[in-house]
Image 1 (cartoon, rainbow, N blue to C red):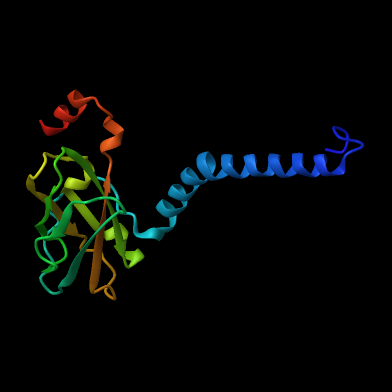
Image 2: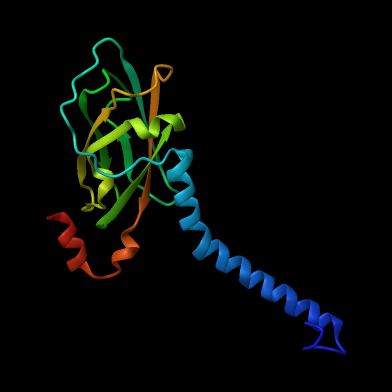
Length: 191
């Protein structure tokens, strides 16, 4: 940058720093998220669970059980009450199970929530399959309304023998702003 500011080293340094900051923002906002998602998908790190899974009748392994724990948290600024109906279930690998999460909107306005899952241990992510889940879509709730949010899952029969406990955690985010003042879009979510 000296060629731009041959007589002013402070201006050259400021220009270099400005270009560096802009480059860092571009990397952090547009380049890093897809790379991170690809890395997590390949390695199974961050406990990201996949999308919808089609159940097959591969049989149930009644010789072993897996304890599945359920946890919920709200992202900062999300006022809903959000929790699993049960904290723990025991399943046989290959068995489909339903659990419900309970949500209540205590505010005086219609809101939309989106639950993002995470699973530990990380090595279990390839063996925990959701066949139906409230987390696949945004969840609108009228002011003061409550809802049971179902989730059906199967722990794969091929889960490694050393994995005996899985913890599924959901973080609930307020995504109402994505709909702005367009209540027609919000109404379409309720159908």
